[in-house]
Image 1 (cartoon, rainbow, N blue to C red):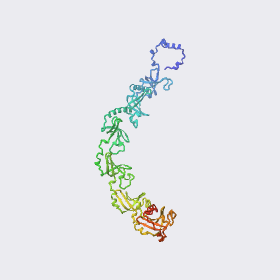
Image 2: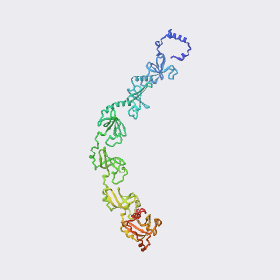
Image 3: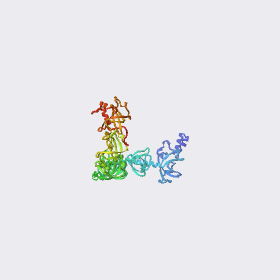
Image 4: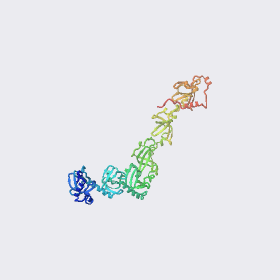
Length: 594
């Protein structure tokens, strides 16, 4: 090899150089010499990155020594020969790439040119591919390995297949494609970087677009077509009909109830489906599987006439009722209100659970909406049908106070059968403002049936009717006009004072009868709890009222005659209010029944 540093170190003049060249050229004038014609420059200059042919001279340890015809030798690492390659032997001709010619290069041994057999092969393969492959061409190759962002495909050289371009829907693991031979469309060629990007998805989409156009022109509603399940979702399955996907909705898979499409079909399964609807503009197709067989609803009225008793299986329980399967594809709803005649149900699961077998009565059918109304309680006798027979008016009953309202108390006399005890029927003598003055929730109590309205499912109960009406005989006989008695003040009003004569019985001491002098405010004369001696002025059994006087207690007959008791057929507002307050008796002394 020429040592240029040595040449530069020679200190020769121009004349001396010309003399030497003339001698070397066998007497020819260097200026008139045809250098291009007489000298093969390829054998004189070494060009980096050029592929040349060489001959293996020998194997030297981990290197193969090759003669490339430059009166110098080159070196190739032995590991550039793959296991499948023919091993190097002296005399073998190979093509190599000149990598480095500088003496100082770390790639070269002393006096050696750095060569590469592997790179030469890659370059030749690339150049061969470039002669036959262009952007937009379809190429075939084997997937060799998975790299970051995609796959490598060998089409003679490795090309890059991005993960997003592997299929129309990105597969869960693109590594499953390793070892498969696939066809792709060349998207981009970068000759500078020697990089090719391909797409299998683009090729599939192009093919599908062609097939889709052809297929859409032949599809008709009602046709039965074969297809392959490509994907599953919560709402259904996508089926490839051979160029276009159709949606098989979960509701069109079976006449019966299914929870997920995977219960009916699997990915890559070939199935037959019926075309239900075609939207040619949006290229959407609705498919059906259950429509291939007859609907069980076609003769539903004949199979399940209204009023018939059917045995079914509970398949779902909701807050408003339970769904009962009568047969595959036919379910009915038992509303919570149709579960029991008497029980108060907060949630259907108090009575039924999924997979329970129960008897139901068909209440109604809506064939168009595919709905059946069912009842559970109708399979049993309605207890209200016998209430009038079991509880005729006058029957004494015992029950539990279930609820209190402003107007009375509801008494449960048997499970699911309540009667109303009105406040006006709680006491003969006492005025009841609220039922809590007499009874409390959960208390057991004896009452008498007053009336039964079977149609409206109502029972009227009475508490005071458990004893005789004291106003009929006892009170008129015990309290006479002119009689002086002692009582206790129970209530003060602006028109007078109520005086309790005995438990549950009180009379009205009007403000005009409190004292001989005029009284503006009853509180000036007495207060609640005071004991007063009073004279009975009148006893009105029909109106259930007793009139009292305090000022007349010690009056003589002459005084009574001089100031007779007023008999006013049209009482004043104050007297009317007093009469209303008095009617019904005592109202502030707390519960009477414990």
